[in-house]
Length: 473
Image (cartoon, rainbow, N blue to C red):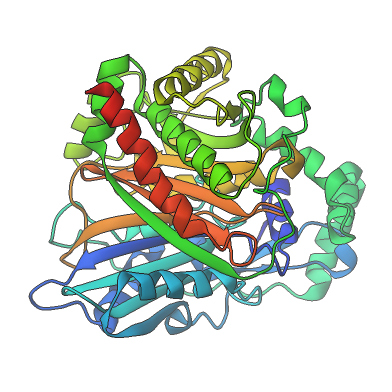
């Protein structure tokens, strides 16, 4: 039995019908010659659960909110409940897959069980299948718990050998034991007990104050955090229903632009998003002046001092070099600037200033485990963004570089990977990015009603990148 940290508990209590707090990941695979059955995936996941023991635990609340909830072993853990099978009518199209992901993303997780689900989606056209996972933000902290998608992937077709493990759940604590432990904490640490009570009563503004201080160890928030974000159609009342769209681009295009203008790949990505947001606002008839900006929260941006070192590390099957850093900041995207190159210059200048001011920490936990760490990073990104007032920013953009080499599940090669970042309160769109095996993948999670034109945003991301490429030729 382990008590949820203040941060974990905050994300657990932030769950609402319109804002389920899980992070998702959609991976598309080429079906191997012998196929990959549901039973084989089930066996693989069960084998790897020893690497993520929290995926067999559920949250147990304490009576009267006397203390933060605790993680306890699920006495009736049912792997078949969590790993599910779904299918599209053959030949399933990408549009049908994205609609399925949107529906699955809309559904909250069952808080009486371990807070995760995985879906094997069969029937996809061109001899492909997909795996969609979702894990609650309170579950994945990057330290004691990694994201399940990170541990089922291998750098070769042959599965990594794993030591056999016989798992037996620890006895469930009684209600009296939980209350006694909570009362003991109230006596020894009365401040924590008061914070827990505030969370239970819904006083999240007070409770999240502690969370912000905790997240401050990972996030460098600059002066813009004291300013209210500009008014934008990106901020509106949202429902629980979602739309999902994707964009697939070549990493080489970003590197060409980077080489031409002496900036970073991350700068180019943010400039591409800036251009897409500009043209999207214009398509809606919104007023766009030269000074118009969109405030973006860019949490857990991960990059190394030597990009080529990361390429070499990924070829060895590692996620990143130990010099990789994580940080979080707010940046005003210059959507009012009509010139694509000038937009890139503004973004690069702002990013350089943040790089000098940021308090960085090494991503040591992620480096320990060879595999696909971006899934864990996107989950951590959502945790950071959730801790700040939504009045501070219009849009969340998570960017987690991945390995530039093929990865496999049960011998099936992963072709594409799209993050599905959660929507926060009054946020109509979130954009997650991951680079993998020579491409950059965008996952756009949007409110079904407030962002009915999310496909327009996807198309404009392609146009914005092409605009920068044309300018660099």
